[in-house]
Image (cartoon, rainbow, N blue to C red; front, top):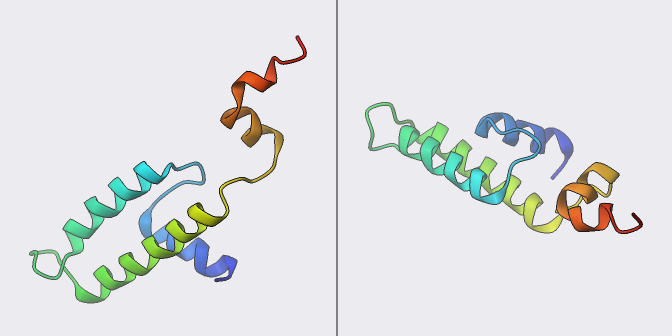
Length: 85
């Protein structure tokens, strides 16, 4: 996976950078219902593209959870921000 592929996947799913796995799954389920080949607005090609995008983003979220910047750390561990105070 390269960044262009990841970026395309996030665009396909319409997600922003700070999305939880729960939000990702909800977004995927909503879009998969819309584009399922058996629905009126469905498309096999779009459904397959959506599934591949979901797999890419989910893999990234499972294996690379932290961005290692101060903002991300403070958001995930708020108790440590006031440790010295």
